[in-house]
Length: 409
Image (cartoon, rainbow, N blue to C red; front, side):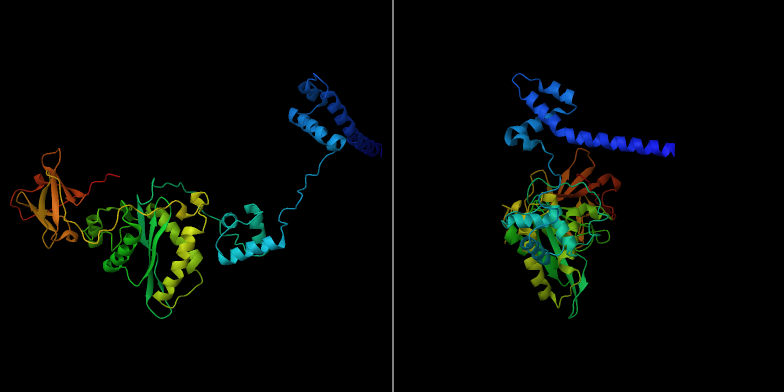
């Protein structure tokens, strides 16, 4: 019992001591500010003596100067407006915008509200909490996202990424193959077209319309599939040959590495989440009627995380290179020898046969010597197609040499 009593006594003693300190804290603060307010007072030394930091000491001095003794009372740490407690009108604005854009989270919704000049826009976490309270938040949406290192080209139209989004069936039959073209620098959607196939003629026709409105890019990046990728042993296609003829450099992503076109792949995920998910379309016309307004929202309204919540249109401008309705003739430098490719895509050079590819049949091909005497480089327009080595076969041989691509990027 003695131990129990002693323990209870010590606990009571500590409580009494704490209560005394609480009761005397005001007097200690009052004494501190009186002493520290005196002319020539050493505030740092007084802070040490009273056991407070200089920051706290100056805080009490500031409050005392403006509020008197009332400023020495501890202020509640509770926010004036509890977190998540926003006006009903503001909550309705948030929920209405969320219904309009079901895939947008708190950060995008907040930025859009700011762009719409709404006053007193809450922080993103408050908007997220509003969505959560109203059952509008998918907690799994942000899970498992990789932390990617972003990179981009320095200016608009330096590089466009092009690809097909996975095709899907339509109610009235047939399949839609969404063609997407995205500017690398700004993430601006150059084009989003509902196509019924992935053939060269279809893509070329759609690109012509895009080029007429946005001008020509310096370079385009695509994967290795048709109609712009490798078909058998033919690296170039009629479509990429046409792009080269327009003065557009062409490059392809590494095989089985879709992250090379990461921006367009990310655009596809956004398209799926905001347009295609849980939705069916009657036909291509119905699909395009959904694509067109959403593309405008994506370019001009939807804040983009990679652009510090700016919209793509804020960073994009049309290319200064216009689309030529009539192609000028090909011209090569004086040190380039010109050979016309056969129907099978073969040129003849120094009594040897060199395969350049069927994509260039009947087209003028340039051949230029390199510092290595037996090696020559092959060009079409401004683009190097690769190199060949004449020492690999004797003159007059029926064997056809293949050119080998040279990686410069």
